[in-house]
Amino acid sequence: MAIALIILGAGMGTRMNSDQPKVLHPIAGAPMLVHAMKAGASLEPAKSVVVAGHGAAAVEKAALAYDPAAQVVIQSEQLGTAHAVAQAQPALDGFEGDALVLYGDTPFIRPETLAAMTAARLTHDIVVLGFEADDPGRYGRLIMQGDQLDRIVEFKDASDKERDINLCNSGVISAKSSVLFDLIDAVGNDNAAGEYYLTDIVGIARDRGLKATVVRCAEAETLGINSRAELSGAEALFQSNARAAAQADGVTLAAPDTVFFAHDTVIGRDTVIEPNVVFAPGVTVESGATIRAFSHLEGCHVSRGAVVGPYARLRPGAELSENVKVGNFVEIKNAQIAEGAKVNHLSYVGDATVGARSNLGAGTITCNYDGVFKHHTTIGEDAFIGSNTMLVAPVTVGDAAMTASGSVITRDVPGGDLAVARAKQENKQGFAVRLFEKLKSRKAKGS
Image (cartoon, rainbow, N blue to C red; front, side, top):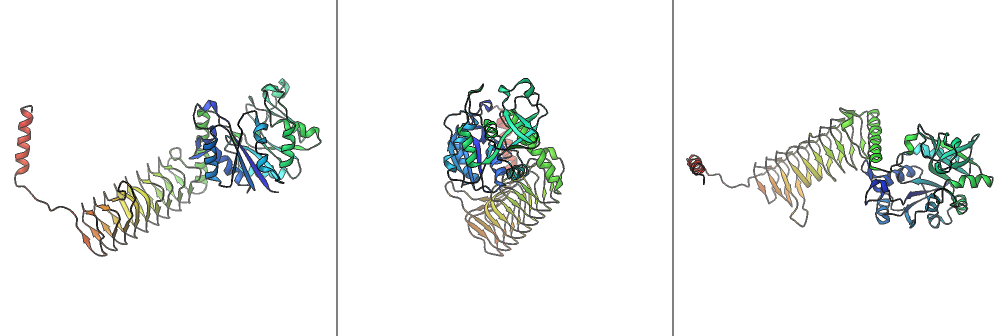
């Protein structure tokens, strides 16, 4: 059965106290909305519809960045969840498959849970995702009759007896698309909030003789984010799960609580990660690498056996081959470092290609930006770049070539050559002593 996702992301999120739409606040480097879209993507949906409202242009940009095929529709008035879902109807006109309603501020529903809902849809007209809450609080309650879901009661409208029930509604619902919109057409707003509740479709469906059931999940999966405090709690939950998963996959974390992963971080087994390492989005580290303390990695690839850090920064486009060494206070950006090459100290390598086994001395800088354009530096195999060399791009240093320490290289260096590009040293006999005496005398006179 084909599936269409309907992801609700129109709310302002007043409690966030932010100009940014609530669903765009990030967890592990990705907007909450993207986490919800990723969960739904596990079902290989035929269509994805995002319902936007507050900050619609920004929501649309984020949605399309993740899935260019997604459709974004607008809920111009916030009249309730049923009204929000109804905005997706034109986008799904003629669609014969199932519709699954997700929420852009509920980022942790597991693919396995959504798969269970899909399986339950084979025998029921409506499937609702529920959870047993330790503290049901103000959640809507799921009223069961045997194994069938009879209705959903919002907290504001629930009796005392119904409020004692701890089986709660997550808001996630699956049904045949045509059935879903037909039921929504029958929803009214005669309730305490004066809103059109999506949850009312269950009672309407039962009155029509349709079958509804509940798939249960852990309460943590249904965590909704409504405030900055809840956002930080969600980040902590994600990181805790990611660290545990990495360790289970054979990654050594010397101080797990100090390592932070992005939503898409990939780490191979037998990699060692030292304390205070941050992975921003887009990082892959192959097996057997070492990431030393206080390093920051983003948009890069680290191959087997490479060593990074401590205090290193890998920026987008950094590609480290096997057994590369990138040491302390080194920054690599949009550069390919070939097998066995070393950039060990206090260097910047940007917009560059470094050949196998080459060694870049301390203080090496590729001067890649002229104020308008970026330019490329090419360093061949087995080259030796002397300490404090400035490579003014575009420039090429050939295989087995060398630059003298302190050189400013502005022309290509042929393979096997030594380039010396610095002023001739002159020693002024006795000048240092005379200069210091003059300065001290001036200081004593207070001048």
